[in-house]
Length: 164
Ligand SMILES: C[S@@+](CC[C@H](N)C(=O)[O-])C[C@H]1O[C@@H](n2cnc3c(N)ncnc32)[C@H](O)[C@@H]1O
Image (cartoon, rainbow, N blue to C red):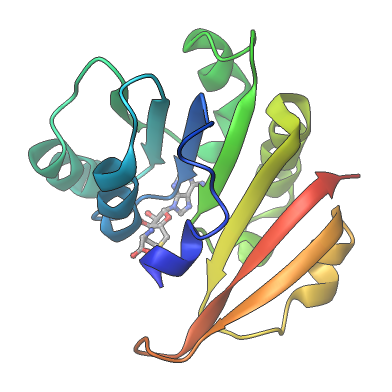
């Protein structure tokens, strides 16, 4: 599932990748493995215990930053990190996005809309295959679903482009 989550990220051209809800880092690990030195990577996680695990697994470096943060503050976080100039090429989310409180979701997608590059991708893993397809289609113009059978439980990834 972690590998599927980043399937549509272009590591050779990306200048900025942002992970939302990194947990203990299964997707983070796949990103860090492929990260080019010139690509800036931010991983956001709200839970302080998970952030401690992430900091141990992925020590900060010039282009890797783990931030304890709530995605409802995504706009100011990206602004503080100096992302504004070139935008985000790829958001990868491990969040149960459709189940987030409406206010959190709205501020998160407002920031995604502001920072996602026109050719950028927003990918969100799920353990409930296809159930939220219409949810993502209401936010993005182009949504494809990648089924991931070899995961416990089976799940998938919504790959979304063209935020409305
Ligand atoms: C379903 S887990 C996925 C964790 C990891 N990405 C994975 O694939 O195993 C969702 C993660 O999002 C974090 N999270 C939930 N709400 C959040 C929020 N509002 N801001 C930041 N992180 C949040 C949770 O603490 C949890 O670690």
